Image (tube, one colour):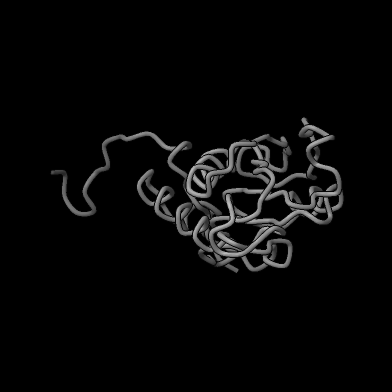
Length: 173
């Protein structure tokens, strides 16, 4: 057992880094859609669905890279500040678009415990689930990801951070 708070083992992600990693995710997804093959428009995906809020930036980048014009959102709340809670759906995507999920690419920034993706996967079992980052506990819920981080790492995303003065490690300046 450690006395460290959950956020003290931090992985800070800049806007540049999330952009590079989201592009890498798009490259991994290219051609994996059901209409598939290299060169297929959008890799064969009918639409991208972002899990709000964290999945919106990566989904936008993936949609741009793969030339997918149909983008929607699903809103699932599974955190209360930095505390995990039971996943609940707040807003669903267009039902006609979604069907059982065939041809739909669901994108999020991170899979942590897997509760969010588990909920969405039950609703759209044939969708393809992609995240930029994955933790071991939730990894089984994601089909494609870029980087795995340890379960005890807290990821600081750029949309959650602000620039501020940081005192030096030693001394006063």
